[in-house]
Length: 178
Image: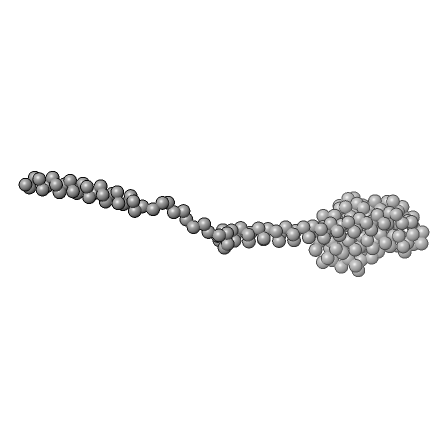
């Protein structure tokens, strides 16, 4: 009987195991997808990306504003030079306006030097020294002295050429001036 009991118990154990497995499979639920999170609040990485984008935007706007200001300064100088080209030339007032334009630009470019106080030979020496091109000393002296002479021997075209060259030499500095 012991053998019969053992066989019966083994069959019951196999049936119980099969029943337990069937019950376990019936107790399983369907796949549950995770709950869909809303879009707010964003993950910390998105906050960092937004902050970096905002910083880039602010820097780009400031750079554009500086570029506009520098170009505006250069365009103003060019308009004044063109206005001088259009005016009647060879008068003391015309040469005074030309020198005033050069002095105003020099003050912007060299703020640490006392440009406004320069006149006569000191102004001539400054113009010659600050020019990148070889400048004829007589031409610059004549341009500067023409402000005080009723009829100058200076050719206005040469004066405009010198002024245009001097301004062009300092274009980058003028755009970089604060």
